[in-house]
Image (cartoon, rainbow, N blue to C red; front, side, top):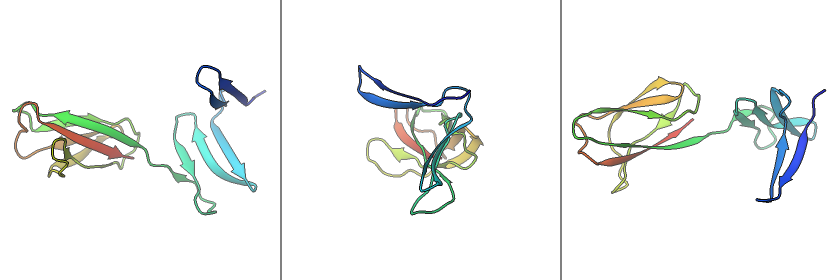
Length: 130
């Protein structure tokens, strides 16, 4: 038999709902309609404005890369498990968006390529949404 566990961690006062008996999904409903779905792989889908279709909730990985003066390509691993991530490159010092080629390397990583090698120690933020 399957069960749903509810508990509060006394050290943090955080409340937990656990479906840890090999459940494939945890689904929360209101008004007899699915409103929130969490798979055992961690994917989260939700409805909005009373809609009946569950949609993927965006997750963000706040990545970064640091130039070494010679490399022009850098791999940023985001682990978002999506074939269609959205990413930008931002100069960490100025906050300006930087032109670079961004290619999806896998469902969990992108490759960022600059025309010229970034200076050694130059840091860029690479937020990835997926």
